[in-house]
Image 1 (cartoon, helix red, strand yellow):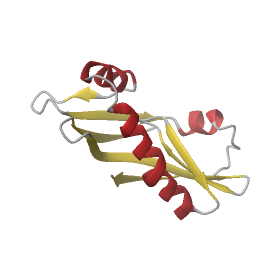
Image 2: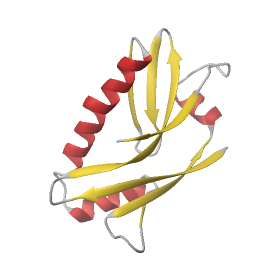
Image 3: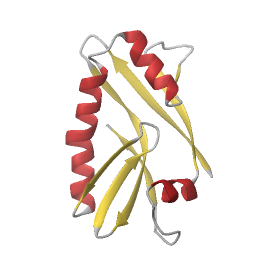
Length: 124
């Protein structure tokens, strides 16, 4: 189990979010999967690049678009339920201490214990 601190900045005025997220990449039955555990988002593609592009161009864009349709309270309640907490200094910044159990991820995706999982941090 590893701990990596992620961050997210919410810009209500311009309805944008940006941050640093931990992503996991793995292959399942010939498809490449990209998963962001702290947001519970996943995407897939025939190649790793295709899966990453889908995550950035479609999944995250839709996620933030739908998020900003909600009130500020609903947004923060939702993110809090995902493990995010507000910064005590900067009220529109959040952080998340991600505790990832790789075995749990493999189990949730119904993958073999021999599946290779690659992790990295990405800024979006």
